[in-house]
Length: 213
Image (cartoon, rainbow, N blue to C red):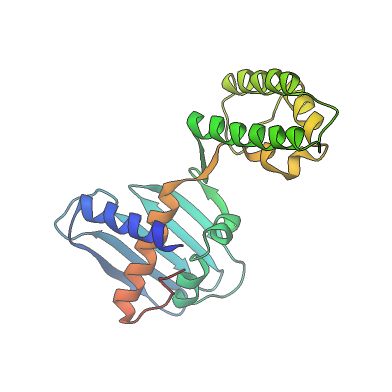
């Protein structure tokens, strides 16, 4: 998790309660169970973390949602704190969660506009001669109209009229920006990561991950 998102998560926890603390509920060679909560009793952002050391599972339950991430090999709690520091890697290991990403309409429009500007640049530089600016503007307006009628999520299936337009500009569109328009990492993942790492480090009495990436 980068410095910007770590600072954001710290501020969010600070806004909900100034005295979040880890509570070790149970630990042996197989399991680790920790609560991360405001010791004043508020349930806001309270989270329970369970690490199955033998199976390599991290189970998260709490006010910010639920998640199960699996590594399928033996782990230590310290390993886990380091593994989830890479947010993309953490997401790849999730096999059950409320949401991994958000698809806000403003983000969708921004990403589509960024793509449009890139293709306009290619046209003006003479690197895309098969399409003129008027045609491009019409195509991207149509893309936006189609996208506006979709409920975008990680399992969305684009209609053929939209993918035909994508293919007109990139025959391998599913491998590029057209395939994840508007996708942003759900902020709850940063809260989960911060809570687990901060809690474990306090319990262990030492820093386990770099804070300056």
